[in-house]
Image 1 (cartoon, chains in turn yellow, purple):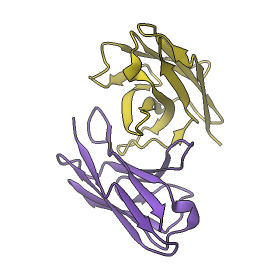
Image 2 (cartoon, rainbow over the protein chains, first blue to last red; image 1 turned 135 degrees about the vertical axis):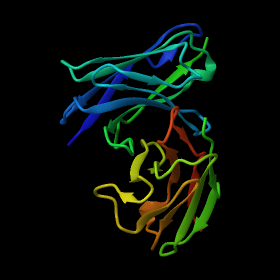
Image 3 (cartoon, one colour; image 1 turned 90 degrees about the horizontal axis):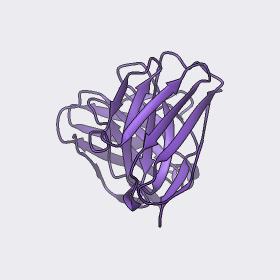
Length: 119
Length: 107
């Protein structure tokens, strides 16, 4: 059974850098895309971006200047960095797995981490 | 970006009812649409992908249809565990985008 588990700081001050890491248990790391999605307090969902196990990335253009994703295949982990955060970045952050099929659905999600940006 | 418009935003229904949720894309997304269910306090769960393919383990009372710009999610014989919020998401182009959700409430 595939499980994703993430960790990182849950409370940040404006201008700080958000850093989250997601580990994959119980399944293969290779052959998949790994994504970050966030859910705002009003419940809207925003796709942040994806990274292939080989390191190739696609980012949401609205966040591209502030986002970096990376992978560590030896540890079966992938990470998100979001710089210069503001209150607008307050959200629940999810990491997900995306099979390398044309439909590209998010078939496994972690439980999510609430990140609050407040001075 | 492709805009995804869901309707209705909420629906009240009873156990045993059939519920239909629609999702419209602002441009042709072929069949690259997924539906997710979210129970409060939980992560979204994949129900359907490629517009009509049922994810493994999802009950057959859930079904999806459509292509191009118009899609539907049908829940037949609504069960107590189905009261949740449902989101559509397009996977045709980047950035991926979601609908704003449809909350299925108990009548």
